[in-house]
Image 1 (cartoon, rainbow, N blue to C red):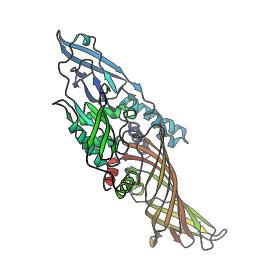
Image 2: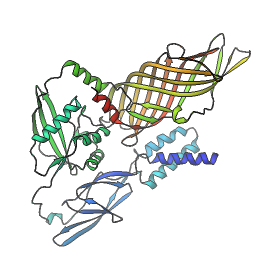
Image 3: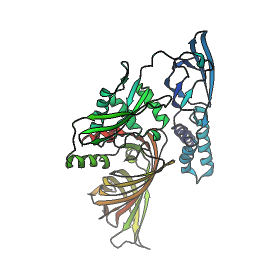
Image 4: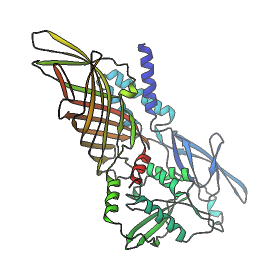
Length: 483
């Protein structure tokens, strides 16, 4: 049994070690476009320029062929990749630190995770943009006609996502372009950017936009160019400028003036208030996490007793129910390495526990009670977050109600739903675009006993959570669309 548990544990940590991903999306281009590129096994990757999802490795070997006046010009090219300690060594150390009090286990955990990353390729970061060398390119004539463009339009900054979409569509219809130019689907583009933390609320600032995210956008939408609109409403008009940028070379065209008349006008006060609520009040959590939670109950003696001793008892309830939680997190995409935000949102409580109590008076008979508790409730409050290059630290303060259903020695006692306040702190780090690791410590206090029995009561408890979650930005977008 112990051997099986050990193998399972090491299997889990080996899987956790590769959360940063064993593949990445890169841009591959050449001085004269049209080169056919293959990997080291001879499998075709694409024709330059293109985006490709490649397997991470220490050295990326490429072969490419381009026809010229002397026949096919062939060349091999090797790309050195770097060790990404922030995305591999640092997360592995953080996850292994849960066993830091047992040094042999800590070293075994960390060593296995690091070796797994090295073998699987997850430890390496290849250049996001790869330009193939071509000594013969200078002697080739420039193409007679410019290539067709596929343009992805980033949502222009506007407090209303629907209006931002109208602005993008109207600008494309009015902008000068070649006959063969086309744009990507606005909805699909928004979906990809939203998962990267880019929304109409903040707009897209290209200087803060990661190249890895740009490559992902190009791969998923097929875009070759990105249009960023810097616009603002003036009376009934939308004015500003648009910059179209080659997604492979990152070269930008001269800014194009934007002057649109959408007939929108100023929004009434109630519409602006609803938009503010949609931007700042998070009515539903936007992430779901599997969060093993350690609860510390603070039972107090009553009815003349002077002590209560509490200990956990094994529970038959599946861990997925006992440890399930909903979390709200801020994606780092829209923020600078150092930034601060304030959000309003919920904290959902769901837990099941079996406890064994000993209570009584000193130097007297010991009373025993076998308890079962079912907790269900929620708090609503403010979460302040400070974003850093290594993760986000946040503090939560909220108020709500949390019910507790109480059984003693197999007999149902009662249910109480008191007012509950909560305060806590958390640290969240994204290990991939959507997967995050979160450590959360929160203390709760009820206005009246949330659980009461003969000789004991419960008004205070605390939770410690280590959550592995998946960021689901579409949830929040759906809620905001109600406004």
